[in-house]
Length: 88
Image 1 (cartoon, rainbow, N blue to C red):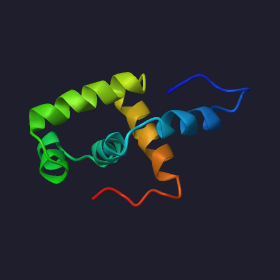
Image 2: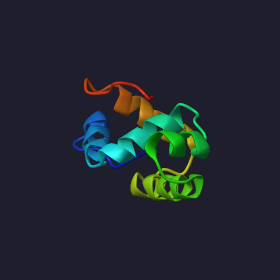
Image 3: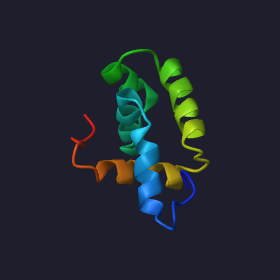
Image 4: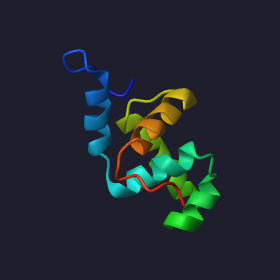
């Protein structure tokens, strides 16, 4: 889970946590969840594959995510926002 619930409303807690992400972190989250490799992400967002791997590790730590399934769930929740335009 990303964070604990707020008065039993886990959806609210997830939205609040994802709002704390920078736009780059959101783009990174979407691309990782879409199955992009670090090399593919680096060519799109800029940087090197090693930098993307470091950013991925920091993002997982920031979101308190320890499994791929949790990561995909966080990306799905992000995609549910009206401002989501998809991974490119």
